[in-house]
Length: 211
Image (cartoon, rainbow, N blue to C red; front, side, top):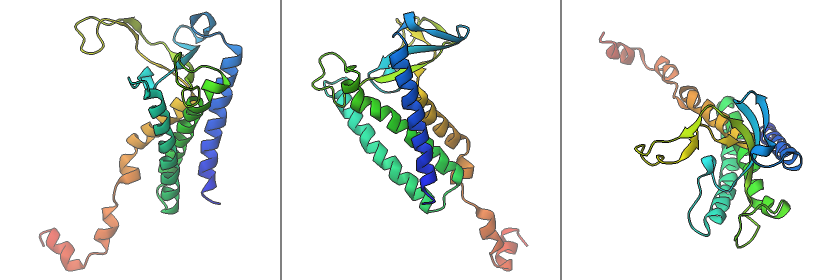
């Protein structure tokens, strides 16, 4: 039962994520007409649908969305097991909480992909089935810069673009979890060599020190 507190944290992320998405869906008009400015033009609520992954990246084939959703489903079970593994092997608690955030975010977006095509009829036109083809609801828009990318810029040139994508609570949980792991790699994954040195025989320590 002591492990369930981490899964409870994931559940809280899921509930908040889904609650915000439902509020946006039922109370906001999609696109620019429904924008709500929170902090000037910098931070806005903007209801949009994301048919793919982060940054709107899509898998190009007719089965791309289905493959993406199934991948998210497999990843959910993998992350769930990894969370249990870390907790049962007494990994640093900070790392476990980060994985709990990532798990909650992954499931939050998986719910959209799996069910929203049926619940909200938002599957892309021409989808073979609304199941597993739902589009993820995004709403937080940090508008730092928006303009036209020059033609000479590789890959991105020749099209309008905003500097930051629109994201949701699930994306934020995943981003925070990953960022904290990256910032605390030594703390979470580093080996503690000093205690091992303390148990070395005295003559071995002296040899290392050149005595």
